[in-house]
Image 1 (cartoon, rainbow, N blue to C red):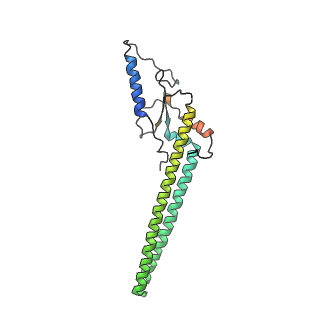
Image 2: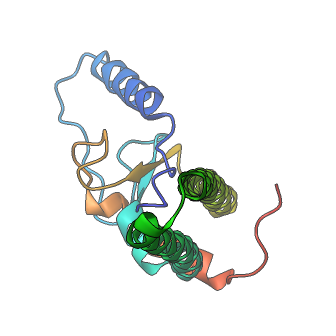
Image 3: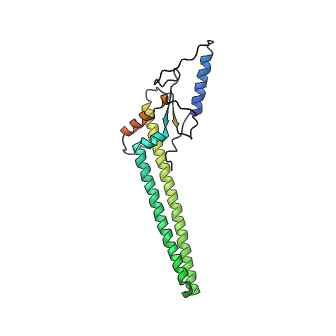
Amino acid sequence: MRTCKQFVSKGLLAALAAGLFMACNGNKAGNNAPASTPAAGTNAPAAGFKIAYVDLDSLEAHFEYFKQRKSELEQKQQGMDNQLKAKGRALQAEYQDLQRKASTLTQEQGETAQRSLMAKQQQLEQEAQNMRAEYAQSETKFNEELQKRLDDFLKSFNADKRYSYIFSYRTGQSNILYADPAFDVTADVIKGMNEKGAGAPAAK
């Protein structure tokens, strides 16, 4: 289960288009001088257009609040699974007991017992469906809360407008084909979000 999958990248195409536009404008100057290369650690690929990215795999691995809430959600799922398995085993045992007693029951008694078992099975199936819906709702709420926490933090983190875009990045699941470590702000984001602590959930 990857509960942080809702941390989606935003504005990627707009950012790439803006970068291309700026590069084209730079080439219209008519000179053939090579473009200036940013100094290491400046996080500035071009004047007036600064980008950064957050590695979501690292964020999930080191953001303490995420790990705590993810563990709670997994425990809830495990509890539901255990409850359903226990009820399923009890129903199976009741069915096997009915099979053993079948020869001693009248037809009416046998039919009554079968109807009872079928009703219990339907009830268990409905309970399982309700539990799946409840878990899905909890997972969605969890993802939305985490997304809001990240969004709110990045607004504060980038309050000085030093970055035009901050992308999300995940190995093998990102539209970003190459990420220069010079523009990786993940460590700063993790540090800042952990310093905020695992307090009350962000307001809706």
